[in-house]
Amino acid sequence: MSRYSKGAIILHWLMALMIIGNLLGGFLHDYVPKEGGQRAFVMGLHTSFGLTIIALTLLRLGWRLANSPPALPHYFTAGERLLAKAAHWAFYIAMLALPFTGWALTNRNDRPLMFFGLFEVPKFGLDKATARDFGEIHENLGWVMVALLALHVIGIIKHLVMDRDNLLPRMGVGQPRG
Image 1 (spheres, rainbow, N blue to C red):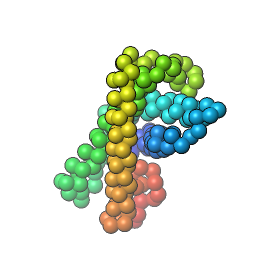
Image 2: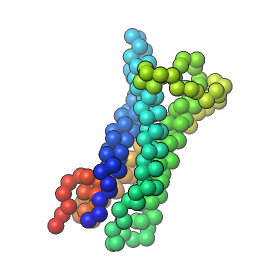
Image 3: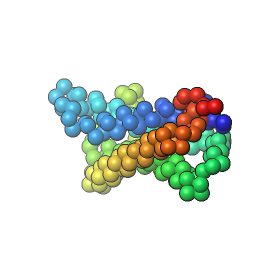
Image 4: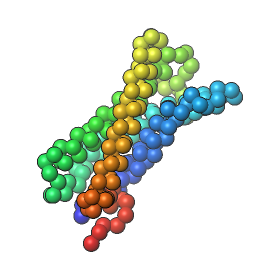
């Protein structure tokens, strides 16, 4: 059984945690109290992790170009192969588009964009109205990412329950079946 490289596995799971955490922070931030700077703290983390996701996605794309992923199993149909490739590239697009639109959204206010409180990140210089338009796009892309994650989980369940194949160990989960 061919597996992804350790680097690819680490990037996959690290980014999965960050993306899920950022989706939760983004969708639930309205429920965090503004008093005491709690919401500002949550959104500061959300923004910083979003910027980190951009960097890690670029690293991951570079890794993928330099290190071919393992071949898909021979028993995959042409449709399954197409779906697997389309899903992977849709994730890459969403992993870049979602945080970039969030970065553009930061132009809606005059506060500096700080990376984990360590240094200021330049903004795009958009006017406030355009930046607010990116807010709508950012939220919609969040829902697109949720849909992609749901499809990914459905695919995992299909392979575990219906196909009973060895795809999960390729990404470092479990032991291959005999």
